[in-house]
Image (tube, helix red, strand yellow):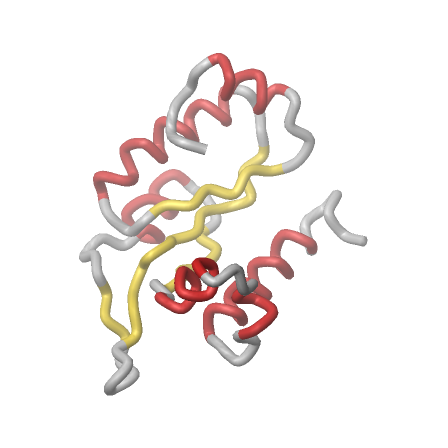
Length: 134
C-alpha cells in the first residue's frame, strides 16, 4: 500500500487479523513515510512482524561483488532506534522484471538464485509466526 493514514487505511487495519510486514529502502527519505505508518498501526494496536529492505544492494555480474546503493542502514538508523525487528535485505534482481515481463513466474524458474533463497527465508519467518503455522 502507498504510505498514508487515510480512511481506507484505517478500515483495512481495523479489520486486519494478523501482522504487518513493512518494506522500505535503506534511505532516510523513505524512513519518514515508514515512521508515520508505523506510528499509525501502533495506534490501531496492529502487530508488526518486522521491516525488510528492498533494493538494498545489487551484485556486480562481472565480479560478483555486492554494491550498496544507499549509505543509510535501516537496522541501525531505524529498527534499533524504535525497537522493531529487522528481518532482511533484498537485492535488486533484474531477472525478476525480465521474467515478469514474459509472464514467467521467477520463483518457479530461478530456484538456484540468492533472491529465491531470500524469499524462502521470508516465507519461513512469516509462516513460523503464531497464527500462521500450518
